[in-house]
Image (cartoon, rainbow over all chains, first blue to last red; front, top):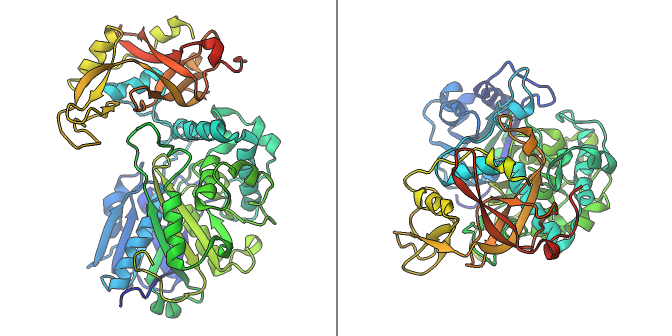
Length: 400
Length: 152
């Protein structure tokens, strides 16, 4: 049965608020899948598909999750990698497999454990410098560029500021709004309220970014279980339907005339996801936008069309993304204040909101949630529309 | 930035593929990749010797003007743990060369103690690093036109 749609029936999130050093990424992957199976009351033997988000720091997660879970005779297995956009591409692959009948019940998992006991975050794998001395890449060490993500996103933000007059305070409004949400989330690592003044007082990392513009680092894992929409009604009291999926990857050939730092793959991906769901931006009740840095949220809002290109700064400055605002965004605190699980951070919160079980932070009448993934350095983008209602059959035909 | 600081920076080690780039740098010349088939220029990409535009293999090295404008720039306030903290803050950016291609992330030097900003015209300059290898940096062609604010 093609085009019948797929749904998320199980969600597992390890204890993100607590720093955990006693487990490996592989242990965490197993824990999250186990939690997700318990969530939908399925034995592991029901799984016939497994998709793993390839991460940067825990190579054991790439190949060993099937055996760690003791899963046999899988019909679908892959480790996928589109950096921060991977979660959406995994949802897409699983949906197609389920719709075609290639698999019926698929687990998707992200797990990572970059932090060691008694080490600072900057000493974790994410803070360790890239150490290439030879060849053209050796220039990075000379310049002081050791592959830091903050440098790459700061360059993009500097371009936006130059072209449109965006300010650091406007970026700060995103961090402040997300911290408001984090204060309401039991999963969040950072729950103390912050103000724009706190943002402005936090130390400079790479201009325009200050510490509070940057995402966290976490030891943890998230898993979801997917099935067909039909099966989902039997497996879960609150199935979350995958209503639209889009990808967009502009490519970077370093040619003059392109402005991929301020116009990302979100333009393409968002449009396609909305087309498939047969809804418009007005129908979106909550946003879960990939937030490697505050700027990533700002540029994605523009590219999805919530405001005009260049107007993201004033758009976010009025606090509309925060608690009580008109456009609830990253309602679990996101990766800035919640926890860092790449695209599985916005995905997990999207599932909770679409289920309507987010407690204090629940967005009222939350029917459609737009979930984004952004990877590389704004090079890769995926968008998923989640909904509490199955809708009519997903529009899968091209160019409808 | 004092030249003394640049001479303390670690030197890149040329490999077979990048040797023409670094030998040219020692002569204070900027060489990048050039496609003999379609004429496109490209900042060197490791292990890629094929033109990204027309897909013809056999990219060559050719000298370029080293002139361009700042496409994007950031001032970085911390260094990797194994580096000298006195380097910070330092600036890196992407330069759009007049040949129509952009550099990878390169070092940008302040001019007369003044910031370089997006849109400023810049030109390549070469400075020797720790082991003597000369390396390209970019600095404003006219700091008095380019500068907009003083470095605090």
